[in-house]
Length: 444
Image (cartoon, rainbow, N blue to C red; front, side, top):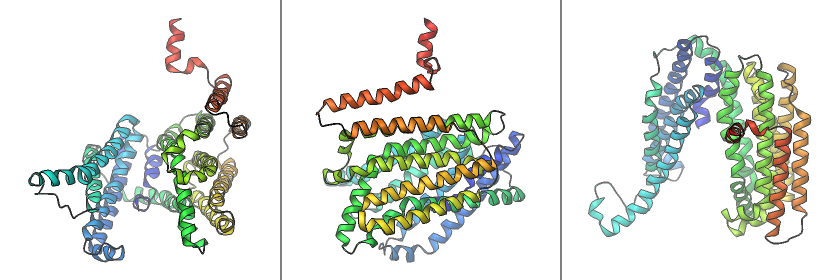
């Protein structure tokens, strides 16, 4: 829903704000974007409120239409808040951006703990303290309330950044922005489908539904183990998009994009090796019943790496205003992913689903690179990146085929990880470029 309600306007804001010559014109882009998202979010909210009873009944919450209303308010506020969050990224305020995101996470955790743990305890021992607001029979409703409260707090904190400069709306500008952004909506929707299609159709591919749900549970648990790579990719996306549009004005922009790509691959491979080498420790984040599925974790990690590279490559169609290509590529990836899942999952189970996702991202990554070199040629250091990838795979294979030597395996794997780090330092990172070490060198 959030992807639909923002309809690509975050990226559209970055693109058009960085085209402007003055801060006043950039603020006009911001206010136009914000007004557009505000209007569509309000329309969405009104529609949901009007049909909340019917929606609640269809979802099994008959008698609790307020659940649907609260959820709609949260989604609408998230959509509206996405634009001031984009503004903070545009203005290079990462600490404030991260602080507000963390505020939402921790306040959500606090309110959930308060309503689901603290309140039942207080109700048992001193019910008169909370009788004026707490209903012990409301149950899951407090999850919705907790989400609503945390989102409201952050939205209120964003209000000062919604009132930047003069509040102006430019219809002609909005029309241009929509022409640019709406293909990104299609890209976003298809992209989410590509990430979830395996979980959606998986149960329908087996006659034994219990077996299907068991395999799906194992497969889903292994994604939790690979969470670090996903979080890194997401953090990279938040930082990279405003950088791309701001850097586009510089003469050395293409060399900078190529350099960022190389270091993204290096860091991703480091995370890959780190997680694989210490998988015996990381596996404890999931139940022992799911450990048989850990064989797909390397495949899932590489899929995330390819997904990040694809996002990295996407700059060409965003900077040349050919955003429709992104929708094409994602659609092709979805078709391949779905086809491979339907053919091979009934035979090989969740392992085939993991490989289907990998091949899907590999294909759209290659397509984006090929077309990108046609419309916006960038000299990526393919040789160097391929060498890093090969070294990482050799180190991974060495670890994989290593005999079980107990705790000494961790020592060997740490040495293997150190080899990758030392190679990186020797080839691409000078010690003096690292801030703390640079100070030590300067003192000497």
